[in-house]
Image (tube, rainbow, N blue to C red):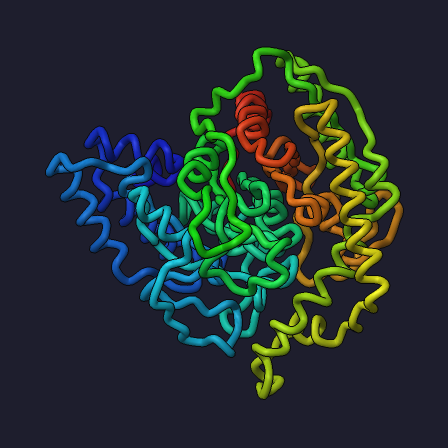
Length: 469
């Protein structure tokens, strides 16, 4: 029974609980047992929630008493260790915050709890949520369940590894440039970076630069992303960026009553892409075409004029450095890891470069706005390569040598513009690693891309594959 529970998604577990086919206690214990069995290899979990079983027993009592149940009643969930959890340590991947115990939940955590979810554990991340690998001085390095010699990504790498390894059915990650979509791609799970502001960032650090930060769900199925997003979205009265929009269809039935128009591209404008990855994007596009969508290769000239990664770098360094400087002030080198040191050593952006980058960001938004007058969605790659070995700083991709920041080439445009994107698996590399594609929609069009993602999921040649740990 335990293996069946671990293979189920959050939506399925909630249904089993509602129908009294399984107890929330059984579900919670199965996931705790799985953590005990495999996390020594993966190192995804930082802290267990000490009252998880107690909360599961309370959830069981509510079912037996016939009380109203939330849509995630009794379902365990995990959260990246930059997201505040009341009474459970949130240490942000740094000895500077060792033992930090928040008094209140982040809005995102509180909303999953209000839906009936039960916090199971906190998951690993890079120092201060800042890098494409999840490694730090406090809790060490997380490993990819598909190949322990490879990274599960960053900054939500512990979260992606935990879900892929069956330790959690649902989680919360954060995304500054790549950080829920990239890790999902490296471990073959699914994730959603919604339109900027759809999910409040209240209770999450760092908040600068707030206009690029997002918090979003990570899971094993598209229907779980839709269900979680339906509970997470909406203003909270504390994050001024948080916004409302048209009602969201968590049932994934959204359709405009016509064939959806979808473009696909792997460049130019994103940097070099491995042919295997490009082939997976093309295969996903063909699958949607066969499913009745109008699909064609496209280009977005704005991405060719202004390289979004360069725009992002010129803007976010200026805004993020003060938060890092404040956190590390007066601290010894034994408490500050390589990424904070790197950030603090970067030169400030000149005011003229900053203004130029702001104008470039506006051009990128305009370019996407024009694109979405003609198309309902865009398919791209998430990462230009599958999950890589630990500690690699440079890559040769399709004959071009680039540094590690180029892995963000197709994801960071959505942070600069605030557009929503879904990361989902549709292929496998010759070395057996997952390859995900990214479905991009217009602002507040989460229903459209989740609807398309659900179609694509049903057609996926790799659906149901799990790492053997």
